[in-house]
Image (cartoon, rainbow, N blue to C red):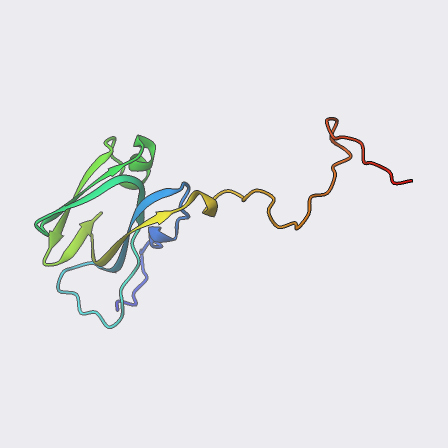
Length: 138
């Protein structure tokens, strides 16, 4: 693994996903196809959310982002379609090569708090104007 960190950017895979949906995660990155790998390489970006991922004859991959703003954020292009090339079994993106990739879903539950389901019984909310009065036992 190349340990020289001069003028290297942090991997953009560390950018938190902003929305639920389908993502293409890139891993085991390297700078050149023949780079000697003493480790797993660097993590690449999580591309998405996506409408689809399609590979043709293991020579290229087509992806489509759900919206233009997500595509522009990750690619700098104003197009939701992106074609990625494969070079000797490595997927090329943004001048880097990746030996491993995965398609995965991020559920809405990972972004939004679930409904109040942790209580065994509900308690009255006396502060709400529409709340009914609490019955008093005599």
